[in-house]
Image (cartoon, rainbow, N blue to C red; front, side, top):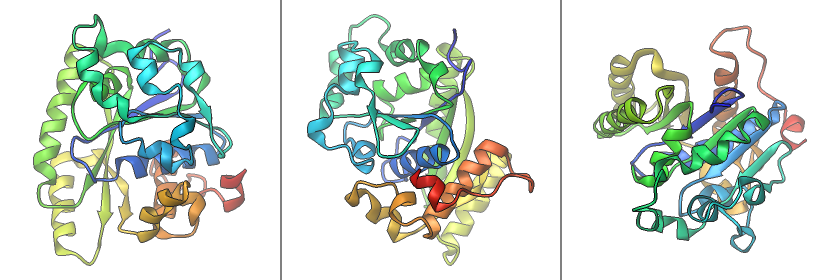
Length: 273
């Protein structure tokens, strides 16, 4: 079986930090689970923020993605259930920051995640990978295993400069490691309609990338920032806040496209299970 034969594997990547990768990974995974999809979230960031955001304490993260990639611990033993029905997690710890050194001479080091997913991808409708804010070995593993890349992009002055670098890396991975890799879409985050800079960046990015930009945008919203400290996705923490509703609309856009006939976003009861 090849990766992608069953379900979709989305790497959520941007080498720039603070653009909303983890917030997107956690809330999009929750949105998919809310409509009955079986979802696996893989935390590949040594900071482990996705694990924290789903309420998995540090002491509960053994084994973890470091053990899976470095020691080849089977994925099934690393997988943890979460409080959200249908959503499982592969947690991360700070040890993962040493992966570039520890696997420096390992054969096939770029394909360790793909090898793990080959035997289990068919069990999930969506696999989301929260990448670290770098283009190191963890991110390369994610891109080599993924069927598509979702790129969160903050509406700021240097957005296009960083995007060009990431697109170049994606193209290199596609040509050398993973021919099926595609760009799922670019998600504008921390969007403020009152800001002239936001509107200018949106215009530039949409003219540069065209229909690769999601119609959904993620607004600046304090509830999105507060939710992780409570160990909950924003969709659980405050279902009705603008940020939560935006991520539910993003899940609908990915699942059903932009058509007017797409089903409505889930209810609060559907999210809680």
